[in-house]
Amino acid sequence: MKAKIFIKYKEGILDPQGTVTNKALKSINIKGIDSMGIGKYIEIDFDKSVKKDDAISITKDSCNKLLVNPNTETYTFEIEE
Amino acid sequence: MKAKIFIKYKEGILDPQGTVTNKALKSINIKGIDSMGIGKYIEIDFDKSVKKDDAISITKDSCNKLLVNPNTETYTFEIEE
Image 1 (tube, chains in turn cyan, yellow):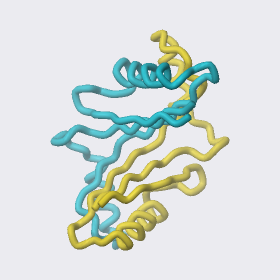
Image 2: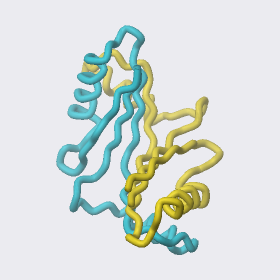
Image 3: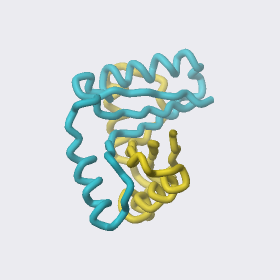
Image 4: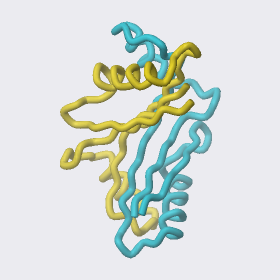
């Protein structure tokens, strides 16, 4: 069982890395991008004994207690069997 | 039109941030995780004039020319309309 977690900045939070990377892409002549945001992509592999319900609660716990800063970030996740 | 890009380390490439974060989760008593990997999650918003085929080629160009290190990382992406 595997979880895929996608963490990004909340709307309105400044994302300097995204802004600078967008400029860098324009400077190497890649056009058509309005804006970009750079966040974190986390893959979790669970122990074999972990069932889907447990995987969901472990993922939420991990995000809320450690991985995500609730002041500035939001997250979504998917569980894959 | 929007692209979501998921970048992670290739199999076999050491991911120290993932290893340390896994330890940190165990230390706050979150159990059931075998291993984890931490990568990048990038969202691109395209200009309104960009069509789906263009979005795909801009995304691939951006990854191959700047965002992804082909020596150590792999990426996948999705286009959303």
